[in-house]
Each structure stands twice: as C-alpha cells, then as structure tokens.
Image (cartoon, rainbow, N blue to C red):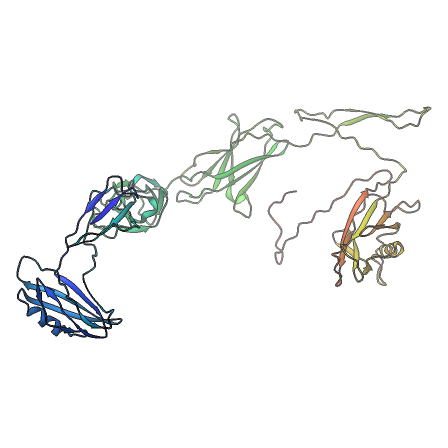
Length: 571
C-alpha cells in the first residue's frame, strides 16, 4: 500500500493506492556453500535441490508438481550463492500462487532461502494529485500474516505536468530583416523547471515549413531576436515550452502572432547626461541607440528650447569617449547663465528621426564671473598704533547676465617681506636601528628630479644640509637647485626629526616662496625596526611682491609615429 499526503504527518487528505502482487515471476535466492533445499507450491513439495542447482533441475522439479505445468528458469551467481528467476507460463487455477520453502538442509547453518517478487518499477500510480506541490510518500507491505508498519522516513515527490503555452506575447519590428519576439513563462509550474523553449516562424499560419530556434531562458519574460528575414514579407511566430517531464508529446503551442519586417527610425539614445561647462555652454554626453533600425545613424538632433531651433550634429563631427559614448559641447548665444534648460537628443538615419530622450534634470550654463574693477586702496598715513589695516573698494563686474556672485576673494602680499618655507623630515622606528639608510629627492619641474646619496638613519643636521645644497651638482652640469637652506635636528622618542628652512636670504631669491615638497625613501637593510620616513610642510613659503602659482599639466600618449593624443580628461 502506498500513501501520499501534502502533510508529512499524513493527517491531511491522504491519497492511497494498493498493489495486488503478480506471482507470474518469482525470484528464489539461496546463500549457501552446500546442502539441499526444497520448493513448495500449493502444499506440493519438490524433491531436494542442491544449493548449486542448474536451471533445468529447478524447472523439472517444479513442473513435476501437479498444479505447475510450464515454467522457465534463469540462474545468476550471487556473492555466496545463486539466484533463480522463475516465470510461470501454464498452471492450474486463475493465477499463479506464491512459492514457499520448507526447512532446508543447507550449510553452513545460517544459510538462507529467500523467495520474493520482482521489484516494482513504475507499476503503481497515484492519481488526482495537485501538480507542482510537494507530497510525502510512504509505503507498507502485506503478506498472509498481515500488514507491516509504514516506513518511518517518507520520501518526497512532486507531481508535474507538461508546460502550458507561454503567455504575454509581443512582436517588435527592428529593421527590414529583424524582428524581436517577446514571450512570458508558462503560467503553470515553476520557471526554474523550464528546460528550454522552441520558437517557430513561417510565412504561413499553418507552419508547414517552419524555421525553428531553441531558446534557453529562465526569466519571467524572454526575448529572442530573429534576423535574416525578407523585407516586406509577413511572418508568423509561435513558441512552446519544455520542462523536466520526460514524455511531452502533447506540446502546447502559443497563439501565433504576425509582423512584417521593414526598416525603422533609430531607437532611443541611452545614458543622456548634461552638465554646465561655460556661461553660454552645456556639455551633452550620451550613448548611441542599441539598434539603428536597419540603416546607419548619420546624425543627432539636440533641442533645448521650444522657441529656438534645434542643432543637428553629424556623427563624424562628434567626439567619442573610450566607452563609446558621444560628447558634444553645446555653445549658443541663446543659452543664458543660471537659466535652467532641459536638453533632448534624437538619433537620425535615412528613414527618419527616432524618439527624443529628455534629460531628467534641468541644467543651467555656468562659469566664473568677470573681473571686478578696483576703485581705490587706502591705508592710514599716521597712527599712534602700528598700521595693520587697509581699505579696499571695488566695483562689481559689468555683465548683462546674473552671474550669481556669492562672494569675493581678496589677496594681498608684502612688497619686501618674505616668509621662508619650513619642511619637517621625520624618521620613525619601532626597534633600534643600525643599518637603515634614507634618501631625499627634489623635483622642481616634471622633467627634473635629483636625489641625495644614501644617508644614515641618524644623519646629522650638517650632513643633511650638505646633501640638499649639492643636489643636482655634477662635473658636467650644476642645476643649482637649492642655494639657501638651514637644517636643525631634534630627537624623537622613536627616531629623529630634521627641520629644513628654505630661502630667507637677503642676497638671493632662488628658494623663496612655496617650495615643492621633498620626497623621502628608506631602506631597512636588514633592520627589524620597521623604519618609515614622512615629510610635511609646517609653513608655506611666500615671496616678496607675491607671485602667481604655476602648475604643470602634461598629457602623454603611447601611440607610435605621428599619432596625437585625443579624448577628454577631468581635474
């Protein structure tokens, strides 16, 4: 008896099925070294059979019984014995009876005679179950003495059905030779059980000579692009799903849809972003459409105001980023600083314009305001206290637009007073050092870098000053990088600090002003103290009369020959 229930305790709506045994084939299994055994059929007993009886011996012994007329026997070897499969072909009565075995004379004494039926392989079926729900299944055996207990650990199984037809169908014409077919998963059964889909398309609704595509998809909605079609020809499409059910002769095809491939305008551009880049300029960045409609895209149309004509830009004139995006710097006198604009972009091919994509955010052109005009600079000429104040007046920039000025920056400097730069070199360690050395390098321009000799970890202030003063000197040339420098050294709890003061000389201005920071490099040379070198600026230098800072920016390419660097960069 087999039972199935959605509840593991079998207290719900339990489904049961019984199985009446078929004794037409019975298996006799003997594990013995020697001796004899007998078989009985309806109270009739065979003559003693040896433990190694041949198929003929078993057959003739059974057919000698009054109610057994014809049997066939096959024998196979087992570990420690033999097995005979007995098939009953002709016998008295409506159906064969079970074989039994009287007490045997087999050796050793623990030898056995086992008589059983063939294993049940798809011989019992439970019906009226709910598909795609997990059932708990258990069984018990019955013989002449009664029923056994149900097995304690129930198996689990899920009844399945073949998939229904896919739903949510749609066709999208991509070009004159391509159509996209979209379809949803079957409404019955889990999506993950779907093994594949079969898509068919044909010029006729009867699908007599269809083209077939196998599709693997485990998503709720699937897409398949079909190309190689004839422009202007009507095609019909259908799809069916297949799952883990082994026999699927009753395939459920979807409703057939039809479409005619024709060339289209391009699809939407993607990734549109707009930023302000000047007082009358916006920078527009976008990615080209994934589909061009069958013809190459030759230009893009940019719009930003209802009362202003759009700008059409050819693809050849656009700058391209490494990731394939296009960049266009939109400059127009109609763009006003701090006014908000919404920019849209459309792709265009021979067929026409694609739909417009509008940037989600409105953006305003922006840029720095014009320079103010200084009207006067006045300081007191007499005072009982030191004169430390000055009064400056100026006029706001003259502009036809609202520059959105939020403040002003005032800079001042001394006509004759300099402020020396001070940099601090610190060497730290976690354990005593003996072999550690360090170097200092100085790079006043991108193309010029000079480095000192290796200095001991406890170098004196004089040694550090000497190395800095001699940076850049050689017999062939003397770059004369550092002329005026003063060095003092102090002791730290776990190292040393060297205070380097640049410039501050009344005779020279070589090292006045803001100095490029020194760079340190340390080599432990086997020491275990984990030495490190850090360099910080504690006071920025300042020149007399002031001087604008100059920063050097270099763009270098790796192209060979006469190729030039192109593209964009950010700071």
